Length: 133
Image 1 (cartoon, rainbow, N blue to C red):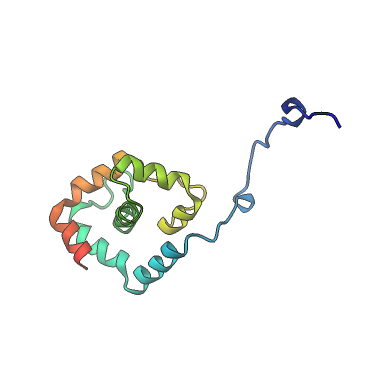
Image 2 (cartoon, one colour):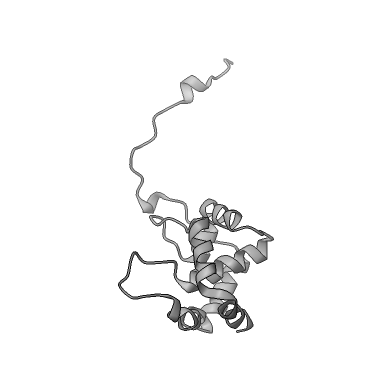
């Protein structure tokens, strides 16, 4: 039996991949259940109401939705990630977490500067209101 080499196994990947060819993981049971609870209690609507004063309609490019931002913070807390860079990296790396955050396959995840800017904009009082909810 001859030893195989990498050279024979190398091949050029296809240039385009359709979203239907991407893997669709079932997601983590904890995050799936958490999303169900948040949806049932209309968490996104509540977070948007609390943060409405910090956003201006029709001014600039669309920002990170408040529901997604607070889900990012919940993710960081649940996984023991204490930095915005770590949270951003973890979300960009995981298809299951993208599903939790409701970020589609063609969309990019929030970067650490977006998370940080949203955090500064919302302020301590808003964070307390949302997490006490």
